[in-house]
Length: 292
Image (tube, rainbow, N blue to C red; front, top):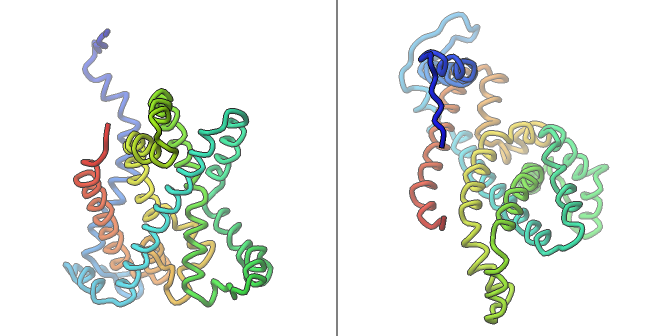
């Protein structure tokens, strides 16, 4: 293997300087500002800032609406992660069994990932609109009075479906690649030994897919907690009565609508800590069961 040697010691630093500048300006600097702002409080007119220590954090955990938002985020994150992974795996298994037209189905299933999150939210809002929505009409015909503007359960189902739909395409691509990397000789040998499709799934396919599943679990968890703001904003805006008010939307609502910048910054720091803690737990406990 040929080793690359730079004659000028400054050249490697010059090459990575643009990416470092982007990271510092758009990631590290705003994160640092949020941490500093979480210990401050502004007056009603935004003219004076005072240091309040951990008061913003104490107020958060005594606020019933914030505690409700924590619970809503937990339910939402688990539902989106589970739904998108399970549906994507089932679709990948179906495509993997196809000898013909697999490429066509793969192309069609990938398309939803190209749709902007806000457009996804508007699309599903129209489909489930109690007045003009096709799915709402079908549910009424089946005897279920769907109304996500009044019922919190309906609103949660709507945002979970809307948030999971594009993510299914992303997960599907990785699952298909993972299935194609499994030698067919293993499955054929198991079939010759008398193992049925279900047993082959749980004893061969899923264990060999565990690295892909673990990676997607981490990615989907981060997606559900950070990248689903446009979906919530376009569909329910956190309602009704806070039933879909996840943490990332509450950060926006309190900071940019309520202009409580100190509390909003503290919420963003807590959200970041929660995601980091969950990621560490996954790498510490769940990765041990992954078979590389």
